[in-house]
Length: 278
Image 1 (spheres, rainbow, N blue to C red):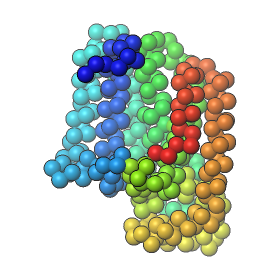
Image 2: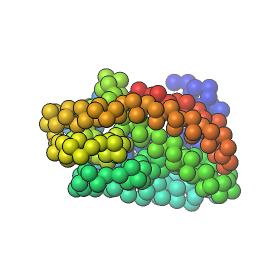
Image 3: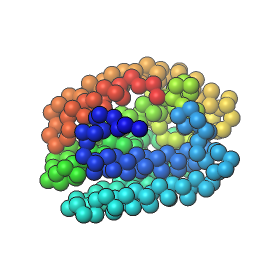
Image 4: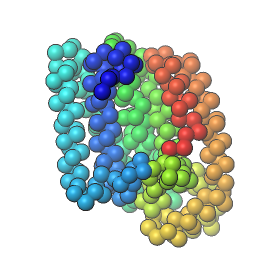
């Protein structure tokens, strides 16, 4: 198979690094599906749902992690940036794992104590670090580690892009079409601290909060529908649309003024994320 023209223009080292990053994402997707007891991912059965896989999927995720470091050693150990690249993956693995732990801890928490601040912290650690910040940090380490100080200054903007992405995921988990998103949402059943429930709690009255506490985190479909009706009652779909428009414009403005990040790439990411359906 002939390599695509745009791939031919990339240094081979950047292609190997991109593979490592995709594998890094993949191992977390495997674990996330197991933790959430999801049934589908991108329109197909989750890896752990296959009859010949099941819980061996956990070991598969460990194999993927091990292969990242093996490829790094084989392809980058002779380069000056090798130690820095490895450190980026180490750091992202730790921060993302902490974010997943924070996300899972909510199942033992009173839903009425969820806050927007808590949601944002979880989203920053669980999503923004590995999906937005880490790829850009890896690219800068590969080409010029001296830019990393500027990247730290722009870290808040990159995290805001990641939080924007997580808020969209939260909305699609509840309101997305599984035929398009490729998965069935489970955030309500799993008692997740999402943007939706945090926003609801900022607007709900006492009676609505009482109903939420009774039905949030329950597995049966009637409870899920009750929670969704509560969301409708406070106008969450309209609130989300306003948020998406406002946040998109604000982040685009911040990107334009930022230094130390690839501005065109970040603009393209925001354009790609805006109004996404999957």
